[in-house]
Image 1 (cartoon, rainbow, N blue to C red):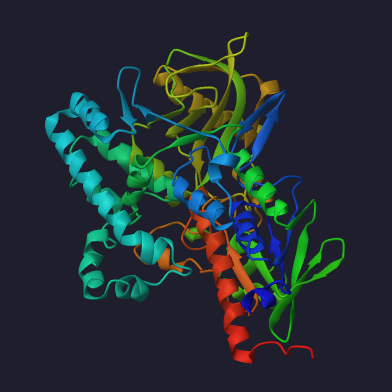
Image 2 (image 1 turned 30 degrees about the vertical axis):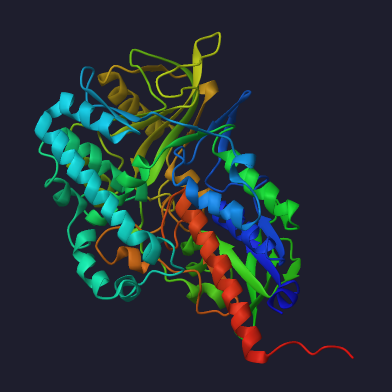
Amino acid sequence: MLQERIVKDRVVVVGAGVAGLASALALSARGLDVTVLERSPAPGGKLRQVGIGPARIDSGPTVFTMRWVFEELFAAAGRNFSDHVRLRSLDVLARHAWDAETRLDLFADEAQSADAIGDFAGRAEAQRYRKFCADSRRIYQILEAPFLRATAPSLPGLVAANGLRGLLELPRIRPFTTMWKALGDYFHDPRLHQLFGRYATYCGSSPYAAPATLMLVAHVEQQGVWIIDGGMHALASAIADCATAQGASILYNQEVSEVITNSGRACGVRLASGEQLAADAVIVNADVGAVSGGLFGASVRRAAAPIAPESRSLSAITWSMVAKADGFPLSRHSVFFSRDYAREFADIFGRNAVPDEPTVYVCGQDRIDNDASTSASGEEELFVLINAPPVGDTKVFDATEIERYAERTFGALARCGLRIERRPETTEVTTPSDFNRMFPATGGALYGRASHGWTSSFARPGARTSVPGLYLAGGSTHPGPGVPMAALSGRAAAASLLADIERDLQRVGPAPVAP
């Protein structure tokens, strides 16, 4: 009977980012009439590619983890994930450098990482690393079912999920200690303290303000990091293709200007062209700031609490490049640390300024582990990123400023031995202003609300809203930022919508049968 009712429900999904596509795949698999509206000409959202000549450079998320999220998503739709997305695992998770002589690799194999840390900083640090891995794994195990898979963040729900045991386990996830302070219990070498503190930036946050709970990110990475054939954008294309194969419609170059309500319930959307599409439910896959900022109409702006500018997560300045790189043995993922980490985050979150000396991330997109594949000219595809304040809605980054930041960034790389020959014609720069244009009402913040303070994770909205028929999904909602987390949010929105349909069906009873 539920299936008979479901096939009559029409859902509009606003946004073809990973979360919106995950919702569309999950709902179309259950027989709903799903239409996805995307204002860009292609799917992916933050999974964007930058074209430079024939090169297509991943210029958003570049690390693929938690493959089980997508295996479950595809399996629920009757499909095999590996039939649609080809993965290659990395042995080297990341290469880290502090200067031209000081380097450390972390590996997919924990024992190999421990040996490397022992050679780098001594046997005692290697032993403490083992303890860190065990504790980060425990945090993840405590949180996966009652928090990461939940449709809404709830401290009571987290505690109640395991009864008295849940209450006793609360201190083990260390919500009341900052990540930086907690890491001092494990790592006495300041370089390792800095390395593992960087995991807070995966959630757009400062290790000096984020809770130690985010140590779980280390375990997520330890579970495996993969390369996707065709780049990260291929993941979005695969989900979109499977959703359309099941009957979903994905319409590109279609900007939604308003979510329409009737008697307080979402009942469709209005496009920028003026066209209206009726719907029984609407899922908005956009930053929650766009909803609370009125970009989808006044009638739904209270469906999401606004994110104050001081609560925004990190933005970035990025360089998507085809260039020669030498002097340093790049791995697929390489990190070059600043000499004053505390000042770096004080610059960003305290002064709203680009750091004088940034930590730099480089993705060598032609590299698998340590193997390089360059063109006949010796050039390769590179993505270079530094963290920046989310001020893209109040500040314009002019060419002179951008070049000053480039000198700081590529100067930091040169200090560590990496020389990159920049050419303007094969380089595209993206600033917080550009990110704010692509993702309005964010200031360029790429992760929604910063995870600062123990309550921050519970401040993210869940899938359901105060407006019946309106659901939220995306990296700024629960359970948080990152590609797999966004997919989980899309699944949560779909699950919430299906549960509400079933509840309404039980309330009104079965449809009458024609004689």
